[in-house]
Image (spheres, rainbow, N blue to C red):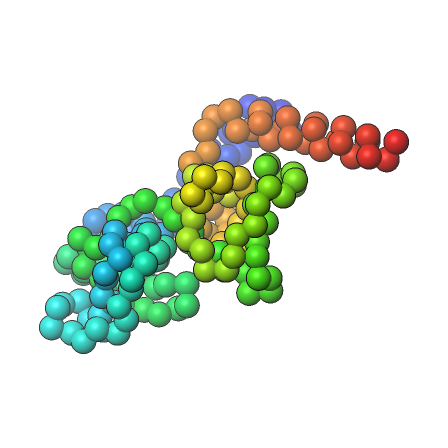
Length: 189
């Protein structure tokens, strides 16, 4: 597949995903979609009003949540533990964060590039800033560490979602493939 065919494919793949997404009745934005908590004091309520009881009190700023429904100034949300309830729109932001959610390991590796070398480890339920996502890998920030992590170990990004990819990413991907080839070739010598 040449470069232009690849770009053409990505463009129409992205369009096809958007055509099938639902739209929020209030905002017109995609439903479902991921956002994050704006504060470290957020109430998840049973219904869309302050008159409804509080189900959970979130105390972690930037926790990723999924908006699954809209009503007036309230958003029905789901968290990484499948808790559902209503949060006032003033307590959420569009910034994308993810949470480490791989129950099979204690710590998750962060790599210098997809399929590259591990440069750091991060523990379960840590919240990290999402920079961009390819089909299988996401580039993330956590404190002073930047790197790539397998998407399947994150909650807060959809499995088939590409996010924030710039136009030169296909060139970078080809560079990584060439680099992998030469590293593998040299290791066998």
